[in-house]
Structure formats: structure tokens, C-alpha cells
Amino acid sequence: MLSLPSFLSCTMWSRRHCCLRTVACGVEDLRCRRREREAALRKARREQQLVSKRLLREDAQEEGEGQSAAVLLGEAEVQQFLRLAQRGTDEKEREKALVSLRRGLQHPETQQTFIRLEGSMRTLVGLLTSNRALLQLEAARCLHELSHSEQSAVAEACLPATSYLLTYLSGHSSDFIELCLYTLGNLIVESEAVRKQLLPQGIVPALAACIQSPHVAVLEALGYALSQLLQAKEAPEQIIPSLLDSSLPQHMLRLMQPGPKLNLGVAVEFAWCLHYIICSQVNNAMLLTHGALPTLAMLLLDLAGAVQRMDDVGLELLACPVLRCLSNLLTEVPVEALEQMELRDERVVAALFILLQFFLQKQPTLLPEGLWLLNNLTGAYSSMQCCREGSGLLPAVVARALALLLAQHTGSL
Image (tube, rainbow, N blue to C red; front, top):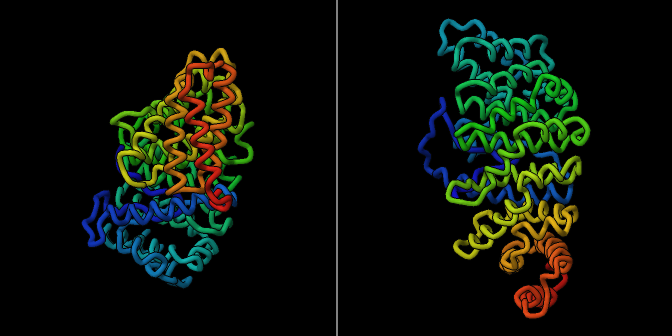
């Protein structure tokens, strides 16, 4: 498996004009810190239904300094930077003004000042739609900072830019597409008005086109934006039916297929997307016809093999949605269909036991997820009469798993 990318509201990898910078702390150190934050955020999200957002920052110094890199700008300074960005003497001066504005927009008070200024968003959208690539990029980064705001009014103020962000998803720059996807993902989860505008404009077909991108970073960003969209309260009625009618489900399952080309970050994002779709119960039969159950089962086997080969590298981020998807799907699959699928293989339960052992030591909060699947698996096996006399592996595995888990202090569960 490839390296785990960053997730949720943590800052992400560094770029300057679409190039990676060499920094003292190193990209892998930054990714490690983001993985740790992601684990905590995913747990909080599951337990508290938090709204999550993600942030791309252009250099790793800002990543390390966090909010200390933000600059509080007054109204006059915001106006000055907008004026220079719009009418500067040369492109370099205009770009520099946008960079200064973007750094100021990292501060919540500057964000409020910006949206209160008449014509500020109109000016920023004008720069976003200009024919100067560097100015477009910096304007998009300013919008991205605004999209990460915790204030709902800021997200509402970005509404005029969303149609252009959607249009740019069909562009040629993978870095610009990635930035647009994360910005849209942040705005979608915050604002119902944004969703109402983007749905009739074709956000689902636009995302379906993005999933064929060869760039891993674009696929990760796509998975994030899609997962944000799927969590909307109106998703079961207005979003998921059109998604199931598109090519997205087949491609999502393709990107979750175990093998040397599997990217952990991409798989995590689409596993969560699949979880939200399954929970909606709109048309899980369609997912089954596309091979969702055997894909998830093989992915579970792959995860069990991975935890035996390496230390904890964030695999629980994938294990959680995979366990949930399998558990939910098992309650809907007819017994005769199970007999034709990978789940009749007792290796699946053996793999689950390996994961339970791993969670017991490393991620005890995920034990209930594993036990829930174990309950549904054993029920499925019983229905298929796989626990017949002489087939001793399954009962032994289940008995050993339960004995081990019950021996632990109840607080660990």
C-alpha cells in the first residue's frame, strides 16, 4: 500500500506554484502529524457528528506555525490588497498582493472584515476568472481559506464563486482541480444554499468525470468532496439516486480493489462514501450487483495481511468504514446470494479475528465495530450451514475471539 495522505481539517502537503518544497521537517513528518490528528478527528466525528473541513496551505512553514502565520488585516489593508491585486502595475505585484490577502484571510477577524466589504467577493471572483494562471491560483487559495472558516456567514459569502469552482473541475491542472475540490467540499458541508446551487448545475456528473483522473491527489480530494456531499440531510432524496445512476459506484469500487495499485488514502475516502450510501438504503441492491460485497471482503483480507506485516500506519482509518459497510450489507443480502460470494470463505472470519487482536492492542475503540461484523458474519454463516460438523475453523476462531475479548476489562470496550 502507498503512504497515507492527510485528512479532514488538518493542513495538507506544501506547494508553491504547483511544486513541492524541500523543508527541514520533511513531508513524511508532516504526514505523520496529520495522521495522528486524523485519527482523533475521525473518532470525534463518529461520536459527536462534527462538521469536518480540510485545509491546503502553500508552504510547510505555515503548517508548522499553525494560526501564528495568520495576519490580522484591517479594512483599509484588505481594500488596499484587493486594489493592488486588481490594478497593480505588473503581474508580480498583483500576485504578491493576493498572497498577502490570503495570509490575512487565515485570521477569523480578517475573514469577517473581508465579507463585510462591499464588492470584495466580486473582485475576488473576477481575479478567479481572469486569464492569468498565477492570479487565478492565488484567488482560488483565498477562497479556500474562506471556505475553511468556522463561521457559516463566510461560507454563504463564497456562494458567487462556487459555479466557477465547479466549472474548473474540467480543467487540465491537477493541482488546481484538487484545490477546487477541497474548497467545494468545505463549502458543501457548511451551506445548504451552496448545495442547492450546485446540484442543478451538475455537481454529481462533474465529480463522476473527476474520478477518471490518473492523479492520486485529485482522487483523494474527490473522495473528500463526495463524502461531504453524501452527508447532507437531503442526500437520500436528492443526491444519492443521481449518484447511483452515474458511473461513480463502479469506479469507487474499482479504486478499493486490493492490489499493488491500491492507495490507502483514496480507499479510505471512498470507503466512507460507500458507508454513507449504504446507510441511506436508497438502492443497496445496485451496489451488490456491482460487486460491493466481495470487494469489501477481499479488502478485509488485505487489511488483515497488512497489520501482520507492518506497525500501525493508520490502517484503522480504512478498517472502520470497511467494517461498517460489510456489517450493513450483510443484513440485506439473501442467503442464496451469500453462497456465491467470497463471504462463504472462512478466511474472512479468520481475518476479522486478526484485526480484532490488532484493535485490542492498538485501537480498542474499534472493537465494537469488529464485534458487530462478527455477529453479522456468524449469523450469515449459520444461515448457510457453514458451521456444520467437521468444519472446525469458524467455531474455533469465534470462540477464541470472544474469549480473548471477554477477558479484557470492560472499560477497554
